[in-house]
Length: 412
Image 1 (cartoon, rainbow, N blue to C red):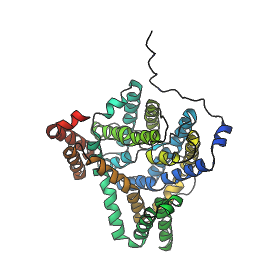
Image 2: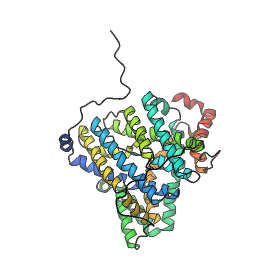
Image 3: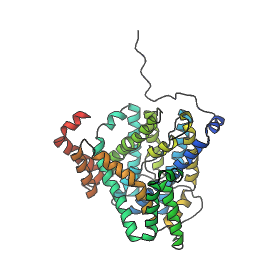
Image 4: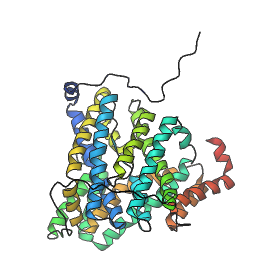
């Protein structure tokens, strides 16, 4: 009896593609509500992270608008295509940890060099998918050490939240109180997610504080994205490519795959990785950070309703993302006109649970010393040989664990 043929490297859809009428029929009230909530989640805190990171790095309003266009319009199209073809919720947006990682790099590198790193990262992810080495690559850096680096990068958002409350109590405090109150009242949080409540309260506080200060050259018209010419610098590539690839493949895609499997889906790991890599190359030319399979939004989409109809909610997220991407310039102008405390508070609140998860994973059981070394080196934010701290955090963390916690490697 001959052995069965090997499974194809790129997973094939288990079901035929749904017709447009079937998609509309599957988009019931539960799927529509979940898709809308998932989309609203993506345009509140996560976008505030982009704006906060970009402002720290000195990006202009036009550069930020183009980044948001790529993050939503292009990734929205990818979400529609993958979810429709595989009839599985596969919402792809952008890597929040990757967006945070580039903040320190923009302080000493050009925008074009950062975009070059995005392109190389996308090529690397696509190559790992085409060779089938994705799972092997994920095992190179232990998760606790990776999350120690992530916690070090994310810490700044938590500190900015505290500073925002101190510097602008009238705006930041009501937002924090609304977030805490809704988080502590689960029944209310189901109807009004805490981040949405914080956004609404913050909007009222900003309006009561007086007219907005519109940024110079800001526009509320639909403006096409800007195409950028990338540049390639070895120090920037070494600083960003490996950390961003790890955060996309391990932190973001890994979370997304786990969420979908827990909901009873079988996401195509290699296809998603290949698509994220290829689209990351494309979005880099409009200034957007690498694409990933999002965990939180997919969790929302797959949270209720019939499992075989979840994909329709994901397609709705993609349609809304495409529309939002077209209005990226107007949204960016409006957000940049708001007080800095508003954006800092939104970004900080959005990162609280992620920061908590990073610390929990980093110091839960294995590799605690390596994770601590990775965290401390990253927080110190001291570049070496022109390469930023997140890269050295991973290097030092792995080296320390190899010297002091070798038994933990044997358990992986």
